[in-house]
Length: 401
Image (cartoon, rainbow, N blue to C red; front, side, top):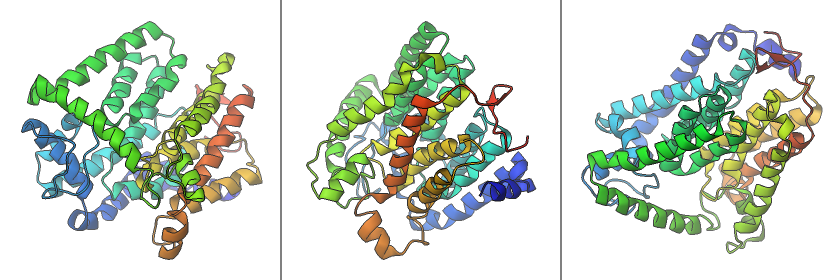
């Protein structure tokens, strides 16, 4: 498999950034085009966040004449989606898809990895990206926020890292995981002050297009809605709860199983590597921790659904390219297992009966990511500072520049 990956990646479309971007962007547009006319419910939810804020309407109730389901994003999202909401739906959806993909593409290329490894990550995640793109999801933005939070801190740009962390938190709460990189910062007081500054900015900003009273009430409404949603996610057979807790609940067919024991154990395993303070400057250790954060965010969330797994799969792919070469058979096997069960299971390649009665029924999409996350936890506790570095970037011995 190592030789095959090396030979494939020698083609121009794998080596030249413009070719990779152009090909992927074209496929993304082709994939979303039918959805523009058939099913763009998520985009309708997004654009109406802007209009409901402007018109000072409730943000978290049902609007059956406009869309089904409910909005779960914070008021600041009105500023993110506003430029697209002002356009006709078809134009807005196309530009939204292009913008989110472009930001995602640029973000992956900010990773301190050799160029070819960054492209391998993009290709490994591409099928999962198409799944989220066809739903017009915000998940690519969450990847940008988490990954760039790390790269900005690494580059001593704590002010902008704080801006992203707070933006992600005020949009969907997921962004708070960017604080996992706090200990990599060399200027922690400045970082803390920046976090406070941006929290105030994002809290106040939506008031410019509505009113202070309205926005304060919407944050209360948002909190109540998220608590309610967390309860409904645990329903057996739903399209969500593809998580550690969801796997347990569905295996024993008991929706009353609490999240707390799983979150406690997960937090403990996640936190143990922070005891290795001497490794904080090690690039490979940092990237493994980034992979852990990306996967943890998804597999310990009861709100995780199929399109959410692009976040986790970026973490899986980072883990894969970091493994020593020649890669061991179990590493390749685990990656193939993840690609088949996590990425391909929610495509037309998987028989509908298997998808409905096994993969969705038991949240099996999450299982490979759970297994790889446990491997990452172990590697973070045992890794030694011996990786090869080139200009601060991790480079694998068997892959040429």
